[in-house]
Image (cartoon, rainbow, N blue to C red; front, side, top):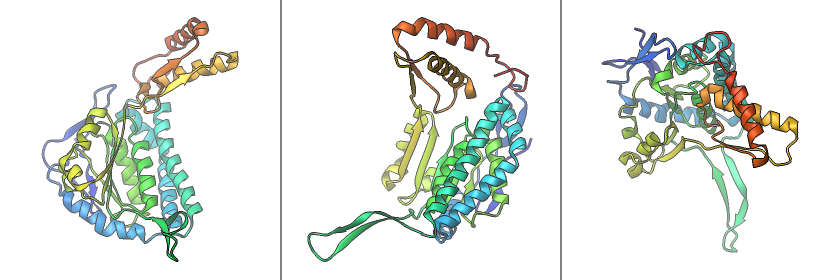
Length: 330
């Protein structure tokens, strides 16, 4: 069985022990395995802080943006092979796999454009200078990157877009990235990481990738690091309550169990009603409804409730489920 190594300290290294299995969810074919056992995560984080941090902070926003553009173009050049991996390991239809990969490249390119706009600066100013207590002194807030590591723990449903959108923001801000994707669908995340590392665009220490369990990673974090997690609320709560993170005051951002609604207004024209039905049905089926932006609540006027339900039933009744590689399966 193929083992997915981790990228730590600017080298691909493999963990010890039993491998967690990655399978094709449609066929249950065994695709790869992953383990983080025995890896020195404390040392890897130290390398990211001491080597990657200064290297990224030494670049201007424009240069960091150019870095992101290279990553985006490299991933786009491998789009078709990446789609096939997304289908195999994620259980995606081809359309859903494209949605994930194109989201990754588009987000990286969007932050690349922002880097160009920010130009050759290394810091940002916040607001205008302010007089202090009527004296001749003035204060001016500056926004600078934290001198730690941005640890990103991803969800299973967007193995490409999920890590890229977090990394784009952190790398542009000047913080080294430590990505830990969900193991079940890590084959796609791993391949995108390989492609990005191979570009040589990222300075030494700027990017790390962990295959397998999170292990004792959180136990090595300190006040200048940050954690961003996307996934279930119970796991998010576990991260928030981690004693090390609490004692060190580590910033934690959790995106879990989003609630989104679609609202149809009473005076909506027929074309709007049809667009509403189309969008609700798409959100219930795209990525099998397993995406943070999926519609969870549908609110319609009572006067058209019956018509909307009938139209939704018909549209959803035409959706074919099954092996995502089979023609017509949605």
